[in-house]
Length: 159
Length: 147
Image (tube, rainbow over all chains, first blue to last red; front, side, top):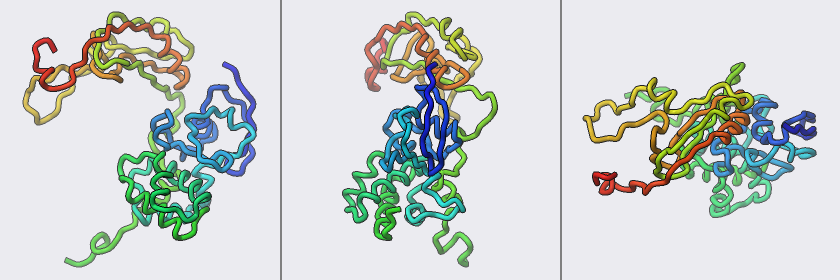
């Protein structure tokens, strides 16, 4: 199987690895870098659980090859969290609004919310719904999630 | 009644901080040495007859540890039943599709391999011939003798 050399930044850290050409970015992050906060739900780009930031844009890491991230800057949920364990404003808003239950889809939602609020600091409800429509949750329902993104926006937390 | 720890006030969930930070630990996050991955061959039609199934090429594919079909597993697996429900005219349920497939996604064979990529490769080597049939879509159709 063909292998390719890969250099990229992941959560601010320089990474140089050799990967199989067909290895997905999601598997590379989870299995090779042990960043298991990025989750695989549907594995074909529908559920959004694998969402990460690629040069600041929200992308689905199950639909990309790791090799396509060569030279890029990747940020995962781990990179959007406080190392000491506290909650960022977006995460705190999710907890306050009951925007999660089992938590499996949650990193994808939090990453999507980061990318969205960075571009839309004062979103309308309609814009929030549209922006979050690429992530699926099967336990909470979406009201708490929409309210969490709204609360984060109202608190001025685009980061 | 007095207000206790859980009554009369909002209680913050203690698991939220780790789940929100990607520090949950789901089953796929647990690393166990030499764990195998599985990939399934599934029906692409809603109903059909399995005319032939040949998994020999998959069995000898790189990294494959086992390939199971109905012939291997079904005799070992007890038929499932829903406890508390009376005996009904339910069709027998099989571990893996045997003779026919009954819905899109009906599992037909399981490949166990060193990793998911090799398991998926081997699934593609399975030679299967299914003769599509008219699916049974509602209760009335299911009650017909020919269904």
